[in-house]
Image (cartoon, rainbow, N blue to C red):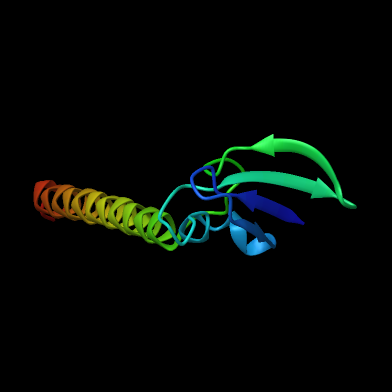
Length: 98
């Protein structure tokens, strides 16, 4: 379980919810100093920005980037497909008549 202490007012917080960036702040607004505890004994101090799960904003940004990349690839495939169709049309017109 995580334990966090506010360096400003000394308030103490407990729980895994502290892994979330928005929950890593004290009521007074100060960033909490988070300590990882194992069976009641302090294991190591970690920064509030470390070992955090991705935030909703970072997930949405990654999804937007993936969609933009997908759209660019689809556009490239469509352009290549049009080029191939044009080459096939030209090839059909170049064939000798019987």
